[in-house]
Image (cartoon, rainbow, N blue to C red; front, side, top):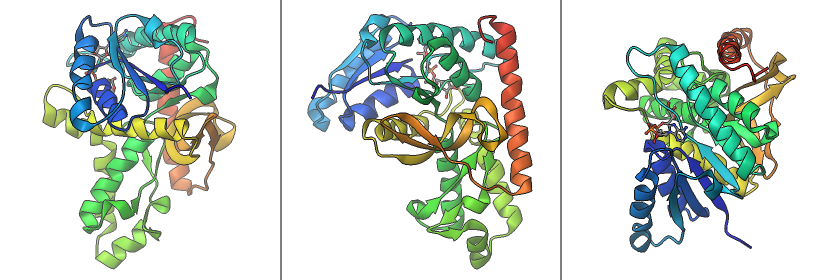
Length: 320
Ligand code: APR
């Protein structure tokens, strides 16, 4: 059987980390693509030289030519620019929308059978636009957000309760960002609902609310600390978990920005929902029971996503 091919579009901080993780796990051969000349080639060379030390067998190449991603099984997209001081949301949207157009066409022309994971922000709008521009089936294009957001929630809960992070199963829904919906009713400590566990541990409901709030702002907290960039280790790790579920056909249930049509009362948009990932891509969106409060929080979140899609349509006429 031929080795799998993993194309990374964008070879910046997340792209480089993705390449390292994918190589260490021997997920397949790796192509780093970027518009910056020399940079993906340099990173590929550097990472290749980890092989003899770490003992991995993966061919890693860097390129500025979309032809080199031909036949990729998995594509992970981080191409784009981050929001800089003075840049409005629409400025950022306009720039990254153009990037998604170029990337979508590159994928359509070179690896239309790939499973595509988008990481570029604003995530829920960019994954939708990438799907539109690439023309791939909705099940083959997904956004990475929930795995990261729930990992942040789990980390903070494990710290608060002083328990192993392995026993925390955190659950978030909705858009990536301030409107995400951490769902306490489905969050457990090895099966014990988080609110019950909090009572056992003498942790107040308001403290749990603070943790939820910190989770929502988890990306911004890291941006503030780094000073000149955004998180990359955990975002890359999250996308790799999704890629592994696809390549291994493991049917994992992961919170992803998936295309939702019908379920959750939604009519065709990408938003964070529990999703089964297997060889077919995002094989099934799982609809869970929500409390009235969770429903209304999800509505706020999906309304914010809808607003971004409207802005995208206003910026590019080809998006209907
Ligand atoms: N095609 C390919 N690559 C591009 C393009 C393009 N049209 N435009 C920009 N890039 C590349 C840049 O050259 C850069 O190397 O995308 C890369 C982005 O890397 P970083 O700036 O290091 O950003 P990173 O931290 O990796 O985050 C990428 O993920 O979490 C989101 O908000 C984050 O949207 C951002 C993305």
